[in-house]
Length: 376
Image 1: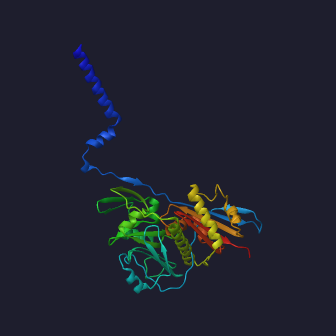
Image 2: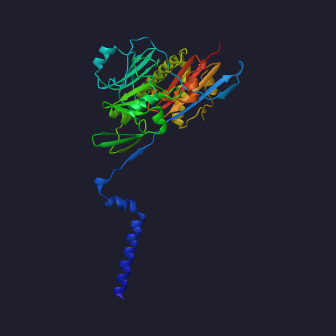
């Protein structure tokens, strides 16, 4: 009897072990696998959003008609021309050398990634130099004219793809941390990523003209911090500094001016008149970005304040023609503006011949452009 009892206990124990292995087979494999052969990647998917809207009263009445439209940028003061090329990133230069070569910037804006933007603004070009600890860590370059022989801007997608062989997968390593960026087909078409002389370069193309529209240079660390594409990694991510509400507002105001100026450079590129800055329209735009982020929605229709026409009325803005572009989850306003430029509807707003004023509102990573033409 005791022998049968022991046999039954052994069989029961065996069944329990088998059941445990079946239920927790993934965890058991991890316990007994060779750690040296394991590569564990954490994944983060980046989803950028953009929408557009236009309102137009019918024959000077108050009735509005909605259609789809796109985004815009700003005008600027004359300054000595900076001549960017793909091999001239400025990365690693000291601020003293920058001032000696280019002079003092038009404006300095804080960024959400720890560096300070030095803005060099001109109606023909727009150059932003990112400085951290008295050293250049990133630059953003664009010109209104894309047929200038002194710059690579305006070069065709095919020519640069042949030269740099754009890829959908890009890898880098910082210390013991390994990172792998996955670009979508749209990413490769609109903003491929290449590395030249240890500097990362994002190439922003205008898909409607097939020309290189702007260039962004970055260090390894800044590319990982910004994460402009979906990323897998082994190790740890580089964390971005936390900011107070007051610090965020300074960052947001800088991005608002950058979007405004960049928009007017794009308009000048297409031989259009620059838009004027409107403070009252900017207030309406800012409140919509704030509302979208705090209420966690993405739409021209606010669950709290209604349509664009309702929000203009609430802000006591009188208009003959109005339009709106919105975007979210871009690394900054410059990237959002390039995204608007490549969307058919948003592009219409950015390059609209009848708009005369622009207000921009940024809250965290939500961006709103409100275009307007007043009566008279």
